[in-house]
Every structure is written in structure tokens, then in C-alpha cells.
Image (cartoon, rainbow, N blue to C red; front, side, top):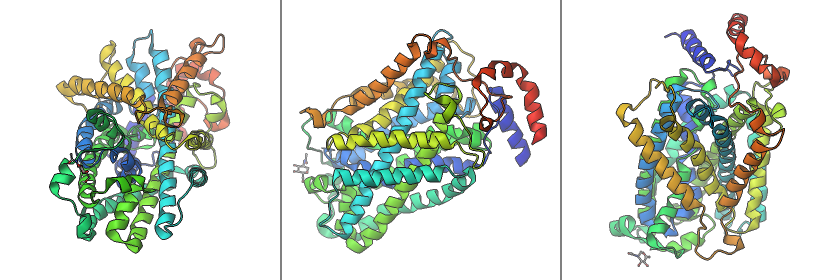
Length: 528
Ligand SMILES: *[C@@H]1O[C@H](CO)[C@@H](O)[C@H](O)[C@H]1NC(C)=O
């Protein structure tokens, strides 16, 4: 197919789903993969969450926890990829929920999914950028061992990072799309530095035996071993998450019905295998003194320091920070697109302000800054106690899992006319979906409990407070007398034929537009 033919097919599929083309289709299939893969951001991510697997099982949790989790995550990804192939739209999860659920509850369910997805994506932004701030602080610590950042200093670095990301994501999509290629290369280089370079550089006293690296189970926090192992899964689950990001740029991707599902599945597959290799390399090269690693400002930075020495660690570590930084900018991009789609349907507070396409940059600048502002607020949790920021990491997984489970389940629970796209699993669809949804439900329940057995306020788990709070408030708003969503929210609103968002046209005209949509689309195409 020629480029024009692919473009026309993409636009036609989107029009069938009820939306007109508002974004440029600037992302090639490789770049769609790049978005998912760079948000997974393998090595920098593993660096950020190593402190969740180290105390909850040590080497066994790192190596076998990763393998177990990868299998389940792949099931989730494949179920999602099927939906993405059938209906590639930037509303994704929440659009699917509406079209697959029974008319009696579809509005409420897509409302819940939209909110869970929004808060989960913003929590991903917050946790990635928090991880980045900790890494920046660790970089200073590597250069000058007497410096250990306070929570307040780390928060300052965090805010600076978020704001710079918002500035970058306000730029045009072309710049962001081209950057993806650089992200992929950097990510792969970092992986191989650890898988090959680390074992070569590690001095004998830090090299571990196979029986330690593959068999030692060190459980420091005091939970029963089985439960500790399950908690350690937060590391892989957080690392290989947010792969719905590829879905949110569906309307900016060429050949979306094939490119998006394959981007999801291959990003998960590659991340699962390479991430496992990284964990194995770390387990062999981290020495046996796990307590000193857990107590260090950044466990992976400490492992590098022991193996590479100061100078080489500084070089490698600055690339880790850069990778994490790029991951944050991709995540702000994805979260802003998700909020944009949700605001397009009027569901977010102040939707009419948020749903604006900046005419100059061609990007939704207002939702970018909305995401940055909420993420900054979530970061304030870091000041509530040493453990409180953990909730933001768990929140990004639990929020997204609520949003992922509902459409995957809805497809099989309700009567609907689901038409598989080019990517589908055939007879394996149902079993894979059952595994995926059961696993996500189970993990959501697990992460609502505190991460250490002695619960006092600093160690309490804020995940349930924040996610529960957001979901309850969204329900209150849904059922609010007169103004609540129940009185007007009808799920994804078709905008075919609507005038550009930049022109600031009110949503009231949407119902009229749908009827005349077909005609106006033709006019739009001619105008191009
Ligand atoms: C694991 O390693 C730690 C630290 O070397 C040691 O204290 C512990 O006994 C080991 N546990 C097992 C089950 O091998």
C-alpha cells in the first residue's frame, strides 16, 4: 500500500469509530513500539524499583519473580492487543469499555475506566519522575559520598523534572516522534552494558555463586515468605506497565490496527526477556550483603559503584538518568493524550478548558500541564513519610489494572458485536483473558495492603486512599444531582464533523454533528 492509501485506511477506520482525524499521523510502527518500549524503559525502571524486590526475597524474587510476572503481563498485553487491533482510538480502554458493555451499565463503567486510567497514567508520570529524581540525587552521591539528599531536596529535583517534561511535551508531535528512535537505541545499549559489561567488571569478592544468585531467598520486611514474594512482583509489574501508551497514540500512528497491537506484544516480550537477563546479571554481581544495598540511597547505583568503580559508574549512571528522563517525557505525552481523549467526551472537570488543541504546536498543551500539576500533587506524598511515595508506584499499577481489566472482561461478559482486528488469538482469546483479569484482580487486592507488617501512619499504604478516593469522588460526581455525569454522560462522544477543538466549539453541537458527520468528513478530506 502507498503511504496515502494507509493514511486513508487509518482515517476511515477512525471515522467508523466515530472520530475525525485531529492529530497528524506522525508515528511509524517502529516509533509506536518505541513509545511502549521507552515507557517500559527497562534498565532505568529496574533501577527505580529494585528496592521493592531486594527486601522481599532478594535474588530469588529478582530472578524468579520477574519470570513469573512476565508470563502474566504478556497475557494482559495480548488481551489488550486484541482490543487495540479491533478499535485503535486514543480513548482506548475507555472507548472499548463503552462499546463492549451492556447499554444498562456502559456509561458508568466507561466513566470508572476513564478515571482509573487517568489517575493510573498520572501516577506513572509521578513515579517515573520520582525515580528519576532519586537517580539524580544518587548521581550526586556517587560524585560526592558525603551528600545524601533529604526528601525535600529530592522533591525539589522532582518538580524541576516534571516541569521540564511538560515543556518538552508541549512541542510538536514531530519532534517527539523522532526522539523515539534515540530512546530505543539508548535503552538497548543500557541493557547490554549490564548484561555483558557488569559481569566482566565485577571484582571477585562481589561475584555470587549460582546457588546464591538463583536460589537465595532473603526476606527482610517480616511478611510470610510467600506473601513477600508476591509483594516483590511490584518491581516487574511497575517496570512492564503503561503499555496502553501505544494505544493512546493510535490516532497519531500510521497503520494503527496492526502497528499498535504488535507494539504492545513485542515491547512486553522483549522487556520480559531482557529484563530477566538484567536481573540475573545483577543477582550474580551484587555481592551477598543485601542489607547494605537496601540501606544505600539507590541500590543499583551501589551495585555499579562496587563493580565499576566511581568514574565508570558516573558515566553509566548518567545514561541511566537520561533513559529514565526520556521515559518520563514519553509518559507525560501518553498521559496527556489519554486525558485529552477523556476531556473530549466531557468527563473530566473543566473539560471545556482541557480539550483544546494548541493551534501553534498542534498538541494539547492544556492537558499536558494538567498532568504535570496533578503529578506534582502526588509527589507531595513523599513528604508524608519515607514509605508514602511507594503508594504512588503501587497506584500506577493498581489504577491501570482497574482500567485494563474492565474492557477485557466486558468483551466476554456482555453481549456485543466484537469484531476481531488483524491481531487476534482465536480460540485462545478467552483463556488468556481469564488469566489476565484474574491476575490483575489478585494484584490489585494485594497492593491495597501495607508493605510492612507494622502499620503506623508513615508506613500506611496510601494506594487505597488515593485510588479509592479518586474512584469514590468520581462516583459522587457521576451521581451528583442535576450536574452529575448520570444526567448527561453518554460515553465516548463522536466528533466526526466537529470544528477543530482549537476553535473552542462547545460540545452541545455533537449530537447534530453525528448525523451530518459523513458529509462533513468528505468535505474535510477535500479541504486537506
Ligand atoms: C541468603 O543469603 C543471606 C546473606 O548471605 C544469608 O544470611 C541467608 O542465610 C541466605 N538464605 C538462604 C535461604 O540461603
